[in-house]
Length: 305
Image (cartoon, rainbow, N blue to C red):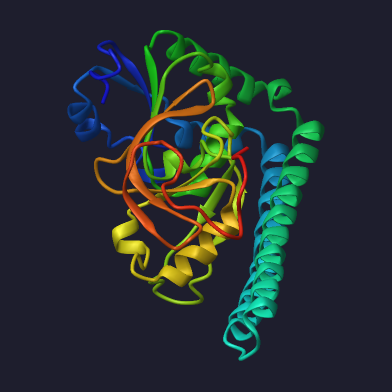
């Protein structure tokens, strides 16, 4: 991938999603084939929280509130999804059932939108009050990170725990510090670059299989919902489930990213791709190239935004 992009010099690494295993980067650097410098965001965050107890307390309170908001959203989501499934099997005329199905999808979409707005509002209020750039330790670490990133050709973001990764990238404003540089990301790293981070699993070890939005992402890869490892986590043969999910996420493209899949963005637009696409008709495009879908939906029609 790096060679394809013409990157042969040093790259900045983000492994914060791996938390305590953040520093175990030797295998990754060897696989990349170029020199790499680990930004150590997780370790830096630990240092910030240890040295700034006032900020740590406020940060922990914000995180607790975000977890509560996520929990309440999930309760509403599960009940709405349950109602939608019950309505979908009613024996009524097809036209009425189609109308009710659209209402069900709209309700799920509204819950998703409201949740993203609430999360964004909470984060914005926290940032306005605490201003990380004015906290001594955070400002120092940001300056150190800027110096490291300035000496690199690209930013590489690995996966791991998606919420931890999102929070550490935001805490140190890493993407702003890397502005203008190519970004290569996968798994959770790719998820945080999108508009909305969507958690999904059709085979969960416990609980409901309803997909849920975690939070707003950075929006550098807009209009795409990234779904890592779909062959093991998505029932690709379930056309009704795929249709319901893709319609709920529309107009965003649902891109399944198996091993070797790629989506290239240039100036905020998909330039080309090699991935799986889940469509609003329930079809699965196993060879999506980044072009508009071959399948059209009688329910969702019109230009992508």
